[in-house]
Length: 61
Image (cartoon, rainbow, N blue to C red; front, side, top):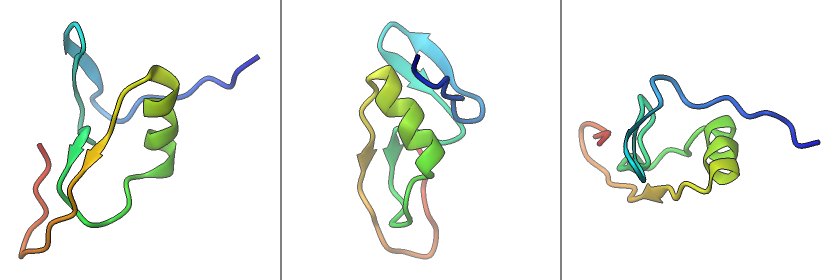
């Protein structure tokens, strides 16, 4: 039996195939995405797109 994965905070389906979350799947920060959230995305077949950008602030979309 597979272990149940908890979604990231504020995760929800907006439309079929479109999701929103406090930890988005388009991630512009250079820091690592939280491992627990990566496991959830993988279990649900959701792709993470990380574009680590440097600057004075990290942007989450």
